[in-house]
View 1 (tube, rainbow over the protein chains, first blue to last red):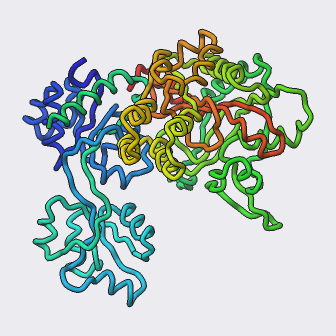
View 2 (view 1 turned 120 degrees about the vertical axis):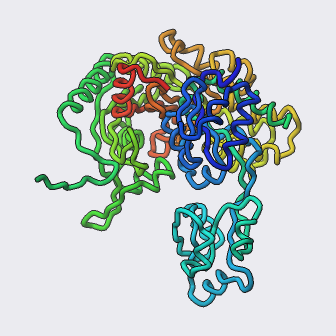
View 3 (view 1 turned 180 degrees about the vertical axis):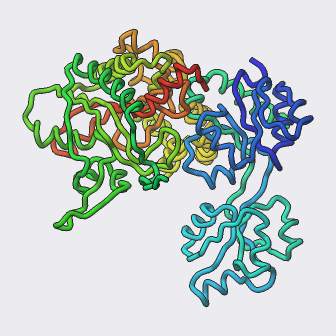
Length: 215
Length: 321
């Protein structure tokens, strides 16, 4: 078997896209058209669909794509999705952290004096679970982008966000206080495709595993 | 101008066109139930919470609870299996075996409203009480396939696994009790990356690690039973008891883990390429009736009639994964 074995794959746009396409190249999937065309979303001949990483579990769960690649951070945030997590693809490493402005820990102070801390995040469920598990009361403020802004403007005392190199945090005068979870790219599969297309899927997973091991 | 009065999210009205089609499916399935000697039962949608939780601790977290005028906690049933287990022990305490019941009834769960996934769902299913092991499973699967054929679904497959297989495998490789819950959780949440991490953490040696990671990923025809070795003994016995009409539909899935805790042996799920989610499923629950006072082996299944309808319509339109 070769290429995607007739399977449809949901490819994440953004930070994971380049390495996803590199991996697909090594499996013999033609990604030239995807690389050449930034606006087009659906590449039927190659079996590729491109989308935001956070939409990948939605498409795969519904069976609109048989398999998909997205970050563990997305899967942890959408943990109720009925999809198989098959393979750690190792690329796109990053860490989900709690961060505040440098200096005194504003979160600890808010918790001590006000009994509750305000935390801004794009990952409300991971954040809520983390503070619940560690026994701290937190008010989660959901924002859609530029989370770093929240503690600088007084919207919140701290943030929960994903960081790869830490440079965005540093540039905004924020420091990491806690690490919640380490994330890398994962291969996921629709539960029905996992049964009905078992041979195609297992062969693809084996070839991906080999490609990753070779580095 | 019309006024919009909403229904709760995840619930909906069914209007005559759809109702006619769903009714046709239910009648076709009822015809099979009747021909196979299954008697239809009705049980109340509301049950005492303490009765339902006796069947399955997971049912201790039903989506909808209310109080009656005496302060008793009532819940909306989340499936029909536990109410029928109650019926068997209270209304058929001395009846001759086996008992064959069927139903077409609503059950209630908290789910994310999505295509074919509702708070209120119509289930059609059977419970076969008093026929143990492979013969009971074979009968339940035969009726399942006949019901799907009668409903007019063409391309369905039945995934067949064994709820006792993986726990037995953990025992066979001496996995300590403390590690079992985490490992089974990874399997149940379909996280093979997590399973790999947890099993690697046990430092068991190459053969045991390969078995614990490889066996639950085996899916396919009868050849996977050979690949699984002694762990698949139970499934081999089931396979030997199945008629050909069923074996042509079966995909063995040694990692199949259904979410309900009461399954003890063979478990199964129905798939169709026209829908991205299972259409229904069931299994053996040989310990469940004992919790209600009548210790009998039993097996059953339920099909989600709404999902079945979506799949039939999808098949006719030529949709496939």
